[in-house]
Image (cartoon, rainbow, N blue to C red; front, top):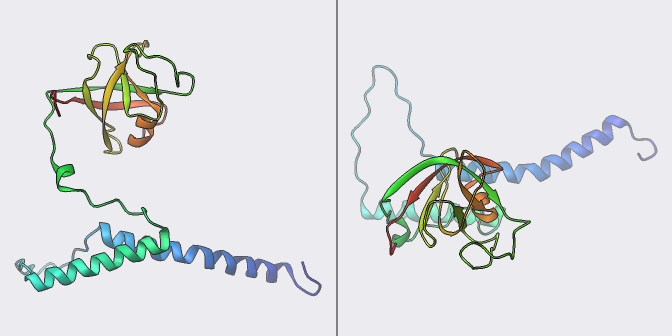
Length: 195
């Protein structure tokens, strides 16, 4: 503390500095919230909502421009990549699985990185792969975490897990991508060949 200052004065300066650091994050969070959630008007009990009117092409263009301005503002504040990228048309196409398995899975990685898998290739803990005792090598599987809703398409390249109650061993990167820490429930959607 400087000579002549009080503890409360120093605390006030520290609070002001913390506020200056946190305030932009709240503003960015408000913009992200506005981008992801649509506001719904509240109606009184006796009022009825007016029927939806389809916007004209000029209004749609104005709305898209406003959305792009908000997106660029969020990226300017939080950095590029803070918002999810717009899905491409090919990414929107959903392939129907041939079989769905609800099971528990765990992940493995650090001790096995670089070693040979049962299929003969080298294990890469950063690749989107998984081990299964029953599925053939090369089978493409959409792994879904039902708690987070995240999903990733992975490929079977190893055998395991050799613990009871588990059907899949995920690579470390795959587990992180779907938000699985340790072990937990997953849904395995076996995709048709060629997809």
